[in-house]
Image (cartoon, rainbow, N blue to C red; front, top):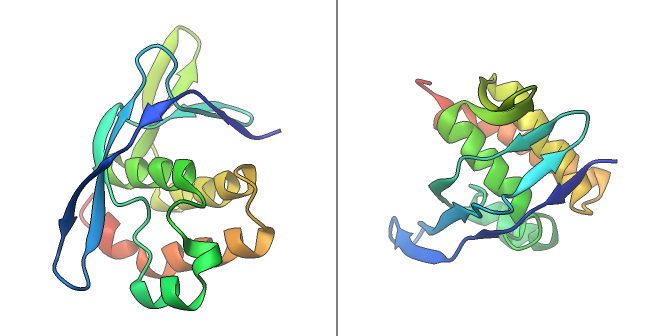
Length: 143
């Protein structure tokens, strides 16, 4: 069973980009009990970074807010933004945690799996996945 554990802090930090901009949050993982995702393997996001909790276009937020609300799948979006920012995730392997490079497609697939683990429907997970596959290249570009 896929699941999340651990705690983190992710308060609002600032607004970026004018009228059609986005809210930026400052993610800080707990040192004692860090945010972790477990399926067949255990993953962690980076310990500290800025995130927008999902780069969902305003039009989609307005037309389907229940699926795309930032507060609906925050842990999934945190992992996805960390994966895009660093091109991978921290993975538990024998002897500790090691950073593992991943492809954009792998990071996007984890987003879909994590949305399901956060209680999202298969329809919502697939729609978000289709969106990041179609438009995520712009954020991933150059990594």
